[in-house]
Length: 494
Image 1 (tube, one colour):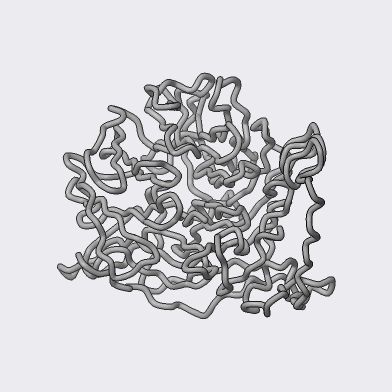
Image 2 (tube, helix red, strand yellow):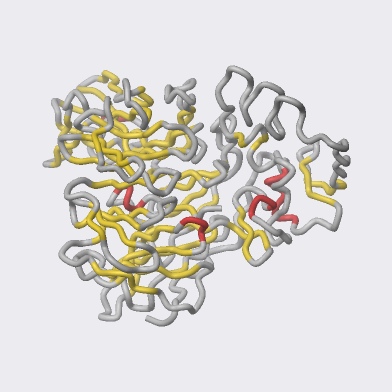
């Protein structure tokens, strides 16, 4: 396996981030397509919602012998922590007191010169001294295998230019792409990805002709539920239970748990969480043996750390309520947050719902949650279904006559306080969509809709969509969702 093969095609020109009738922009982020501004100038969005060039303000020289104002941290008001008002919680969608994507250090557009990623606007990272689009990784069906059959492919694409590129060689199946810390490597499983012969491999980014490095095979069990960034090691589940890790440079595979699934790394790259059937959420802190997170329900599953606060996100079904779709018994899950340190009483972020209609009810449960990196928002899917005497049909499906026009899967965003409690009402983002995933800067949400990757710009202050979604139209590939969080789109770190 010595070279990469581009299996995808360029499905269309760059999709513009539309801002409304007659508007060219709502902020400088929307002016990225104008290209590199002349020296000493930058693109801005004026009061008429048009992109225009303005001179970059010259910062005054600091007073001799002084730094920041007495009693403050750099860039904050006296008596406050970075990004917070005195006595209040962090404003959603902001970093260190500035709006994401608009502070003075993030004004270089795509293709512009940079010395480090903080120079680049939201959605971009600095590579080879040029601001480039962040990549998104997904698993899709439609790969043509060497035996003439079809299989899956681990793919990467710039978030704003539909151009799916396979990470494995021509004719070789692959799946579960995961970026490494810093965004310079990507791991994936290739070969026979459905059994123990699958190869856990790593290759550098940007994708070049450099060969992928095989780190290990599944041994005695299939490699599943793999996670890497922000971890210092690559973690995965052996088949259906038990977690192993390996360094990105290879070496010895370590079995870190004998049970459990859904591993997730904390921001420090060492602590991790996972869920185990009938016992709930476990957390390993500072290299210690995993212990049950106090306050989490025995039915807890799919834990997720955010990168800033101490809150852990998870799903649970404490009442043990189930519903039957055909022959499949499904738990009616709710969404909770709970502090990693000390545990406590979980905060309900999204509960089940039930609306009475003639002939039965239209109910819903929660699935596929994920944090915004700064912990200010949670994205999740609410799955609506008609319920007639315990027999369920997903809304939008044939036979779901009680649902009316209601979609089966709807992506919502819920603002969250630093305490872990919900802040205000949820914001509906997309219908008939699933597996939402925030970009590292919190300005974009990727999700899957009808087998296509969508990327929706949002206002990080309100959670509302701030333009038209970029749609990576289906061609050779159909993006998969059938394995839940295992197929959630992954963003390249900034």
